[in-house]
Length: 385
Ligand code: NZQ
Ligand code: ZN
Image (tube, rainbow, N blue to C red; front, side, top):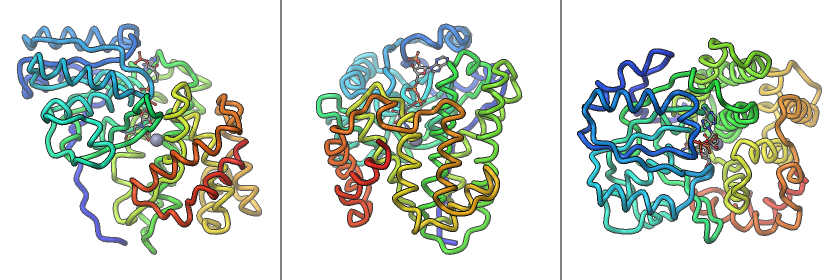
């Protein structure tokens, strides 16, 4: 076990009736709110109506800021900060998926400083303060609703970077599985793959020598993700599957599994962020489905025993590492996830450019650049052609 500090202050309201607590919760954070959302899915899944009714009940002054795009961009974030400052809002409600929550976190941090918000992402500045954030989650994928991360793309350079800080933990998050019923199947698949990747990174890349608890929790969450995703794809109207899936996705990346595992590198994420930064139409989970088996293939000798454990936990035992990767890849295909760069519309000519961006991200994350030299990142991506 490695030493650790575990801190997660997010109050989670979970279930089909959770919104009955919403007006009471938001009253704690002020009188004037910036309601941030995307392109309108919240108006179809019921979240918008429930939020507006509760805000009315709470007598709240509401400023709406919509149009957050998947893989959220810096220019729209800056607009949100301008509005938050001009309107002097007390707090932010983020209603949607990870993109909406991440951009809301950026607005929350940017609204309380007089320098450019991008400085937080390039590492020039540290997030120390932010407006309070309350989230209403409609897409289980990132766990941004229960962590302190935020990822934004500077669309002018194609650089997708992340920041974090305790001030970015939401005050409260509302998880109503019924809001996820309108999700297209591919978003369930991408969300599941993203959650699996959040476990895969510390599972294979941790530094602790002995931590059975984290690995056993990880195995349990991985199994739950696989089972609930498969069940939702067969029975999309089943509330129990949606609920079990939603909570497993959040637990996958709320910090619990990583306790005592020590420093874990996130190479699959660095490479995927480079892809979706340059190709913003690629969903994060789709990019990860392509990168993960390719990365496993590159690392298979170093992660041998864990790879066999991962595979046997999810799919039953196999003879060797290559078979373990193949069985994982086949499962990804079976749920409809892409497993090659060409399937996500990325030509092999883009590999050098992606590798350059990935290296930049890895440097910012303090990763081992000897293992992840540009040449080696290219080798990983060559495995994904
Ligand atoms: O624009 P709207 O209307 O909101 O539609 C969204 C969007 O088109 C739609 N959607 C959301 N809920 C829906 C729905 N459609 C129908 N019914 C619903 N209930 O789904 C589309 C994708 O949404 P998005 O928020 O982009 O997806 P996701 O939650 O996967 O977020 C991805 C972003 O989060 C970042 C990713 O890099 C990417 O930018 N990540 C954030 C992390 C974090 N903060 O901890 C960690 C992750 O590793 C990840 O990097
Ligand atoms: Zn992710």
